[in-house]
Length: 155
Image 1 (tube, rainbow, N blue to C red):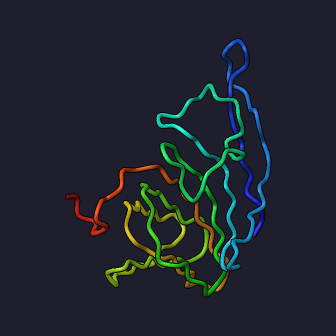
Image 2 (image 1 turned 30 degrees about the horizontal axis):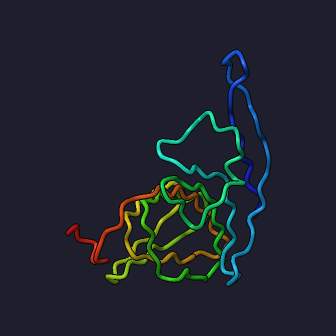
Image 3 (image 1 turned 90 degrees about the vertical axis):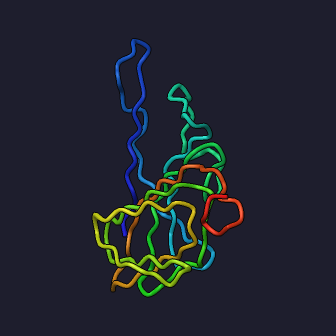
């Protein structure tokens, strides 16, 4: 798949809106080779500080960012399945192309097509590319409070 174009806006000294960055990010392979990630933006606080002039793609983060958010594009190779995982975050996943199956640790699964949106709320899940081509998803991960005992039930 092609790179991902990211446009960032900001302000001139007089307060008028301007484009401060327009660049293409090439997704980079994860160690397993099953997927490619392009981290497009990170905020290190919530609420975010729109006065911060740093390029959010250059800010440190893991899969998530404590007290902040991460915007990432994921390209998953055909026939590949991510490890089962969960994060202390609310994740908005938007299918951009391909066919993805979301699998939950309960055994439940659902197929997603372009335009479908998943709101992942700290649940244990895996992604499977069930199509014949690369599947692309956009993810916004926003820091959330931990669930506690891992059962998914608020104590």
